[in-house]
Length: 73
Image (cartoon, rainbow, N blue to C red; front, side, top):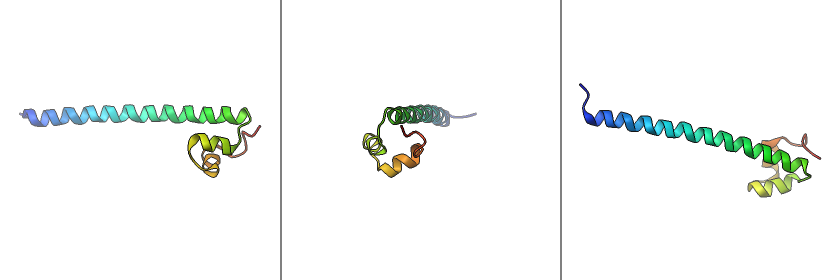
C-alpha cells in the first residue's frame, strides 16, 4: 500500500506536468500571434529594422526568424 507522501509527490508532479503543458500551449499561441503581427507590420510597410526594434532583436535575427523578403511591401 502506498503511503501519503509518495501519493502527494505523485499528485504534485502531475500538477506541475499539467502546468508545463499549459505553458507550452501558451507559448505556441504567443509565437503564432507574434508571427502574424510581424507579417502585418511588413504588409503595412515596416522595414526589418522597424520590426527588429519592436522585437528587441537585430534586423538579421528578425529576417531569419520571420522570413526574409517574401513579405516585403
